[in-house]
Length: 78
Image (cartoon, rainbow, N blue to C red):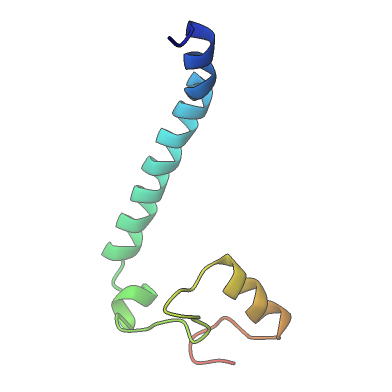
């Protein structure tokens, strides 16, 4: 049988939960703003994909690798 202490240790603190909710709300808001902006890169070039993708993935590692290699992250530039 688990003690109340072990159950509490596995559950996020109220502050961590609040932060996670806030980050989701902010993320959803930013996505909505970008999707509804007719001049955003998403609207102007909806089929654009990062050139630095590795195995179909573009994440922090690929971004940092591109910066280290001197890649210029601007539309049509390299």
